[in-house]
Image (cartoon, rainbow, N blue to C red; front, side, top):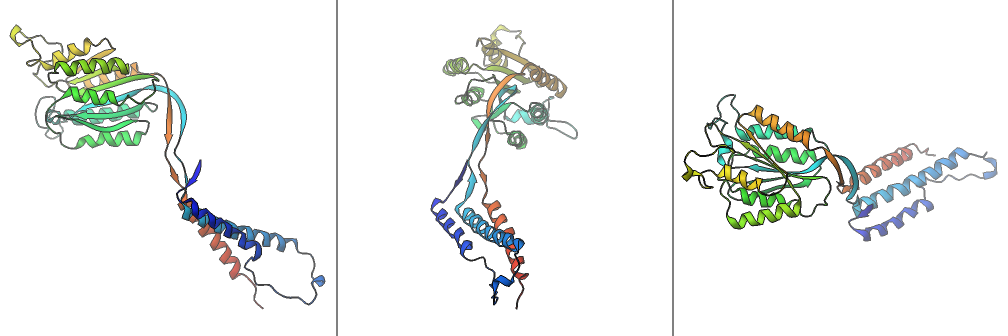
Length: 325
């Protein structure tokens, strides 16, 4: 749908009537017009010049009025899912899987995640993806969108240094909120990418249980395990260490398992293991997906000015070709 920013300027379209009364060509007098033979070509050229003049004025007025095509949407059907990437931005993500500062060809966990998630996005052209991050506080990055350039740019932005500690419950809450205003179409997935966890207080647990049930979300946890650190499935040798404070990853995994939602945990101890886990998720989530693609507003004023410039150049060329007597 076409619209303008300044409607009152459309009154200037009345000026398009001026070429009907004057075509800009200097008249030449003849003693007796009956002596001139019929000239259909000249008549056609005269009409075309008047139309060019009218179109030039109209293009200038529409450009000044701010002609644009309004934002629209269209229904799309594909195979994919609604996915929110929840990325851990704690300091430990800037270390390698060996728990060291990257040196030489070594790759940090954040770098590996950024590279492999970028490949994942490129392999899924029909997904709606959103991105949230968390450290001490949750960080909103991108709402659910089909714009792959924006998604890739948001993933690349994680190249900035990490922030502080891990507060996963607030990050999960923000990730689930991204589904709040979305129609229930296709699979809803939260893909948590983290190398650690923290204890979740009882109030946050109750809130997350309610959110997961309301939003009907599938949960994948890609746990990037640092060498010699406790894993998701490890049990402590001393029963006194079997608590959320000592083994937060294990207890977060148990909490996720108790949510009564589709949940899968992947424990990756290297970039290759991480690639395999992402490939498995890519294979599993290929359901039919109906969504509406947003087509942003398109400014047409530049096209109006360009058209007016071309028409003016044509009229000037004709004027310079006018014979003078």
